[in-house]
Image: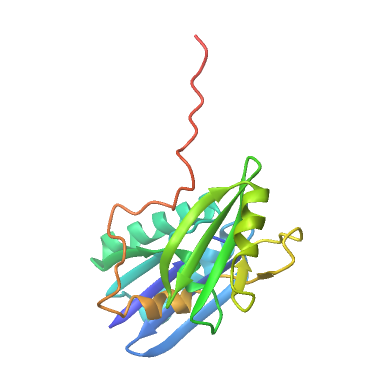
Length: 201
């Protein structure tokens, strides 16, 4: 099974290509949300070396809406030409770590934060929106040994450790036939309803 994984939801982008059980291609880079050039350079390198793929998995966030949309759009284009199976997975299920259970927090803007809990790489709680005070209360109730990760710096939460999702983990998750993955049409994980500004008449 050949699997291409694309992950652009955080400040560290990554692309991986898995053939069977072997990761044959793995690239990570600082993901500047205003410049997607490195993403397409690594993608072109992967295609030149390995050609078409059988499966494509995309990290769906939560995180950078723009980055996730770019990854989804690229995956759709590749799927059309290769007829590969296209699926999506929450990016936070693929945080680079070696613990079976962990929490993920993030800045949801508009004076709010999100909380999610992952167990065995499955999203088992959230992401739920809450205020800073509510999140502090939530974290205080967690087991002191539970790891808390964030994909962006949140110095006000001293237990939160900066970690990023990894495309190679997404690729490995996509090999599990029992895992529930999202099918097309793929969309970024929305933390709240999209805000639409209606023009004044």
